Image: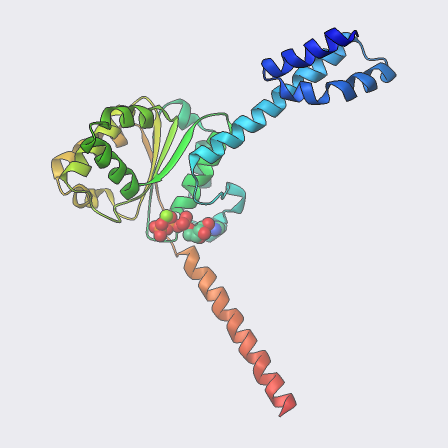
Length: 267
Ligand SMILES: Nc1ncnc2c1ncn2[C@@H]1O[C@H](COP(=O)(O)OP(=O)(O)OP(=O)(O)O)[C@@H](O)[C@H]1O
Ligand SMILES: [Mg+2]
């Protein structure tokens, strides 16, 4: 290859942002010449490497933008600890059919039973499938919507939030919304209705959602839209946090026992 062609090739690769090919080209051309690869083999390999790297960095970017507070997948979830969860329903959700059909998922249950964990696991699967996800706590979301409303920017904010293929709204009901918050939240649910999927987690039963919104009419309108196409996972069981605390309690007993025994030996 002439010097001019070589330099132009690298300049064009950089211009087209084909960074992987630009980086591996020289080495790979040497190896390919030694191995007697055809031009088609070389092109196929280089383009495939570029595609794989682009996909990996796009996934990394989407994972970062999703804003998961922790990255916990299904493989870290102990289903035996929580027998009230129907695994076949979770497997079906993990197929992401609900995302493709713009359906919703609601995880209900007391603290520590794994609602946020499972919501995040579904979010991670969705990012891996090449789709956009955004995770937010309900109170943070409503504060942002209210601020946008006051700055006359609610429309733009709703548009952005409506676009995510999956929006995860965690901790519905820990703090009630005021009238403005309830109005903004209703707008968001309306925008996403039958267009994109939303996952909610809450420790309040549907009957108690009226208290979250103060206004039972808005609560009914929100629930009507959410539940029209929705899978509800009602988790009844013990807190996993409590289990871990018990284990730590057990460990400190063991430590005390060891200290006692050591005291007896030394004393
Ligand atoms: N069955 C489980 N297997 C493994 N880890 C679990 C399980 N259930 C919960 N956990 C872990 O326990 C902790 C609490 O779970 P999580 O945050 O999902 O609870 P939650 O139902 O959302 O509770 P809260 O209502 O207080 O927000 C997390 O660290 C989570 O990863
Ligand atoms: Mg939670």
